[in-house]
Image (cartoon, rainbow, N blue to C red; front, side, top):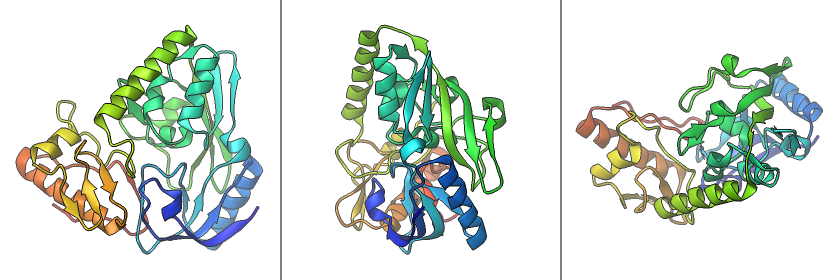
Length: 292
């Protein structure tokens, strides 16, 4: 398996910012993934999985790590009875469409989530009243020492959280779905995609949602909007005029611009609502928000 050095990550992320990865690999099988993880252990560098490039913000100077993009067998999707078996690198959209074609419902929520099922399990991604915890049978997890199949209780899935540790990679997932009329599934997918398009900047370069919702009765986007920050700009980045919990790249943004916007939003929301926003986006490299 080829391991590249100093690969620019801006072109591998949906926001389009950030510097290079010290090492970059595209494992296409479990054996290649284990080889990559062993390489990282030997080099003494951390492992990061970039998926389709959403939900990540890379430091402008890059990240001293082995960055992985799972491909081949590790991105394959199969239907076994009423279970979807997918590699960790499989796109949510592909899984949703395979489920629809097989007449399997329950995964429609993922049509509104850009990214992969591996990333979805790692952060227990969710939308429109459901999440991966609701459908997960088990996950195959690989690290430098072993490969094991892990049931949901061990993953401790909760709101945008799992017990997966750095260096642990979701190689495969099994998702339990239910038999349903494909036409009904298709209609539900269309409904969710239309709702997403109407409320989110789907045609702009973003990394997805910036912050977790601080409370069940207070959404991060609403809180940011109430602080008058829609359209607030730093450098080449702007808090989306369409949705307060998104940051758009206007064309020449840096990751530092995005972090400055996040810091401003976090400070103002804390001042007005007394809550501390926690970022949902994963930071790659030495990025951090200043203390409140």
